[in-house]
Image (cartoon, rainbow, N blue to C red; front, side):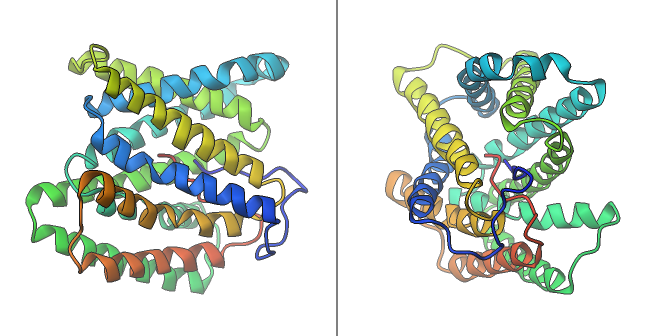
Length: 311
């Protein structure tokens, strides 16, 4: 999930992070890298995984929010509540597309394609009237060239893999929309309060979809419950929470670039845990995609929000 740094705290765009932040970044990237492989390995319905991931995350942050942000929660206006609700629905839609993609295509392809989130965010900003640097357009061209090669490789594997690729791309677009709406809320609302609202409303929306579609929300094995817990503790708490700590002393640009290592990390873990070895053509295509995304991130100003993944 993208975060907006607190006013006056963002360091220079390319300043070297403190040594402590480098270690924390490594922990955070490793934590979010486990998300795709864990979801692919969890024996529960895809949307049920999305629900429990957000429900458990909400339960984890609720005591802190209610203890430290009770006055802020009570003072929220209609606009902030409406925007937070919209963000929660967009987050639910993101999980509702990206998580099923992991059942259709490889973890490597899904993680690489959902990493196009910063590209979609730049296009959304352009649609809203913001200027886009010329270098960013070149980065988008590189990224989409990588997308075309990855999806082309998957076409040769199966129509199922291509469907997963398309879902992952839509998931990246929805994550960018979620971030764009959330950034408006974060102008006047703390990270803790916003996260509680977004995750909570996302969980409620996914609960409704799961109940309506008859997806089982319980009756899982002990292993499955442990995987769901690991997903929440790892990607959500050790990943996103650590990134929020880093933002106090490290620039959003540096953090966004570091988070791109999630894709090779997830691909490596999927190979080790699940035996998913992508075809050799995937490697140069993924490198092209990530290079393009990196150019887009680097072309943004020092005040840009970091590309912290929603997954």
